[in-house]
Length: 78
Image 1 (cartoon, rainbow, N blue to C red):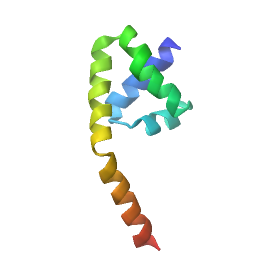
Image 2: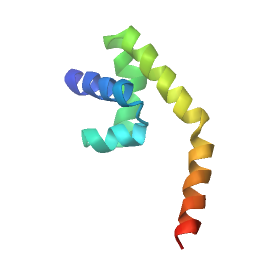
Image 3: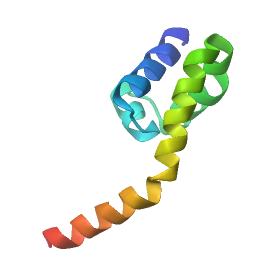
């Protein structure tokens, strides 16, 4: 479990990945990644936790923009 948490955190920081992307690559659910990053990582490596937190907060702040772009692309393809 400890290795999974650290591997997921490293993946997120290296790729600026979203929780969804990290979950897909690691083969676990979004809830698992979410709890790993918000609860378990803080206890394992606080510095890495803060870097991951910054990336996830940024992803949250631009979520509405990505959703709008995806919807636009969906209708452009039709």
